[in-house]
Image 1 (spheres, helix red, strand yellow):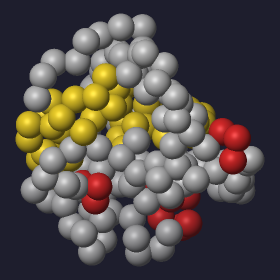
Image 2 (cartoon, helix red, strand yellow; image 1 turned 180 degrees about the vertical axis):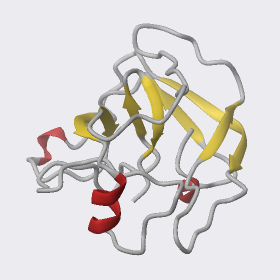
Image 3 (cartoon, one colour; image 1 turned 45 degrees about the horizontal axis):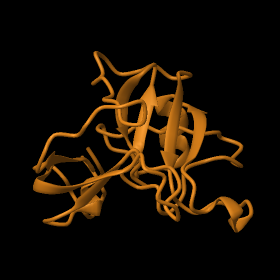
Length: 157
């Protein structure tokens, strides 16, 4: 699963990756056999920004590669979620090659819509801190938003 705006017809998926500058021996590199954008994806307003990536071969599960459950329901406002990625950071460049993780709360629909007037569709939710300071950033797109061990969505914009 990734963000539809990250679409390419062929992708290589990296599993078990932590530090992209070092071969740690835990990585799996698997080509995609099919990439399917949500048919409702709208590149103008970024609505339905999600896609499926079918792997050309099964992933080998290990302590570094584990599946995540699909959600049984939408997580309510206030639920803490983890986002992760190799996107831009405001900290030193020493960590730029290492996977960064951050716990952030899901915002209420009203806080979300008030923060981004006219930009939030019914298929979107917001997570983060209203006061700012900690958030996903450019380069994190398509990364997972995991709440209570369930994949609630992907980082979009």
